[in-house]
Length: 427
Image (cartoon, rainbow, N blue to C red; front, side, top):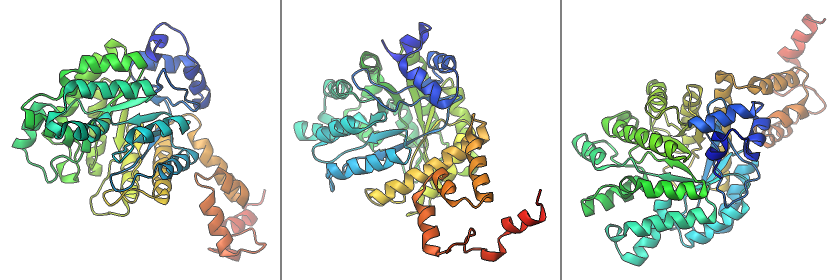
């Protein structure tokens, strides 16, 4: 049975029970969220997930880390190290975005090694392998596309990004309302080329019933992708983006009724003053489905620092109701991320998610901050390191500053305000 089937029958699955315990919420809250589509638990029937994640209403904001090979770099062992680093730092899910050689082998290795849910964008394998077999994107048959979905589902992929909202209507709207950057989604661009070359509708939209059949058979969560997300803040919240969102709302409703878990992917590059509206639109149009956002990046002028621009947007989006943050690394738009880029991206995203959880009043969120603040007052450095999101960097900084035997840091040294206040307010 699928997670939704179990929840709708009034029962509690092992995954629901475990997530309820780690989230400090009732199992019934998660069961009801699964039933009404406001919570998802990405877990394929064919795969064991030792650290399952609940994503959605009333739960902690989760984060995802993207890894995967490219045409210029197909070192599987390097991607596995990135995955291990991301999970070790607290990533709740991994997405394999491989487009390099040995795409199937890479995915199978990630599925075998990952302790957390694993997602893919099936159109990548469809195009990469389809080009070798058929020569041109336009010549890839729909049956081949659906076959790739089924093969990935059989292997155990927990969630799929499916760009079913890139419809002919939305592409026509894009033609009438040109952007600075027309399509920045790789999956969206692949599908747009297939559609325009064949003068046909999006195959994932036209054959959505077959997509749902595959998803339900293996209990794959559908992450309905934002193939027309803005890639420049000046393009944000335009008619193509909203048209796509309206379509995704219709498909979410259809899939939920059919018994398939769904979350919705969102922008993208969005100025700060539009983030709340984007979250509220998704929640309204898509019936409260979990919202999975890439960033959003709040400015376009910081290449090399986009983990920061994304963390700013992610914190705001999550505080307003977004449920799942896709990390962005410093190398976004520039290169395949290194191990250190992955580390920086995960930590920035974790900071954003936790800051949002405090604002959302998630149970226990602020307790973490209170604990580290008390350790700071006591100048208990080891406890501060243990409680930090990243324990390695603060430990390294303190060691490099050579504080000696002092219980203060070298910023204030003997003029430590905490120590002075301690003497003044001695109780």
